[in-house]
Image (cartoon, rainbow, N blue to C red):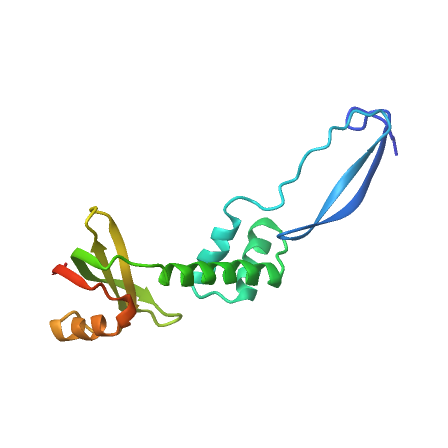
Length: 181
């Protein structure tokens, strides 16, 4: 076999395989051996932008850790460890819990309530309501006060039950106007 040619300049000594540990799991790279000194090293990003969001999106669609790991393997031929998937989803759960525990204003002049219907289920899909309460504070800023999954309708009695499930510590002290959209 001819060792030198347009695709293999003189001074090139092949390459060596190396496994680099990254946050997305081990990545195998080829490191060129270059006697002529013409190779310029490049920085390899440790994590692809938007990768965490993609994992969280798949997690939100009720995929298992194994199914989430299979997605980048099929799409990009990249192995992702179970540990990475668990860390990313755990961070998302922690952020959600911090959001749910955030302090709310004590007074909301206007509170809007509505039900958004979402298709839920694997195999047999059903439209289920997600009850949403949005408060508008004195600075005319919107604040999601709560989200609640449900199975029933949108009548006054049902809304009374939904709003009654809100813990006392999370309820505004005063609401001037409650509007159902």
